[in-house]
Figure 1 (cartoon, rainbow, N blue to C red):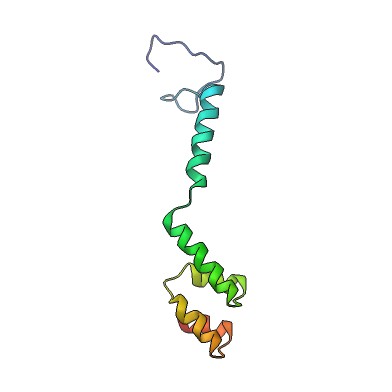
Figure 2: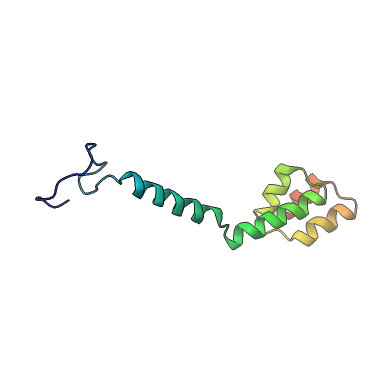
Length: 95
């Protein structure tokens, strides 16, 4: 804040170079943050889809999450289980 300016609220800023947001401003910032956080990235969408496919193939959630977040070949992960590999063995092969 410049030297001649006065504060509109009675609480001190969190930093000498920042002013606290007013109530209306806080609400707008919160709404913008919620909008930004609610829009998943393309990578998050792909990971979610991979996780869904792995769970449908019978992978336990912890293994499915590891595989979904990795670069492992999703189709191979499903094939290994279809050919009789245990989920744990398939995960060890792929990771």
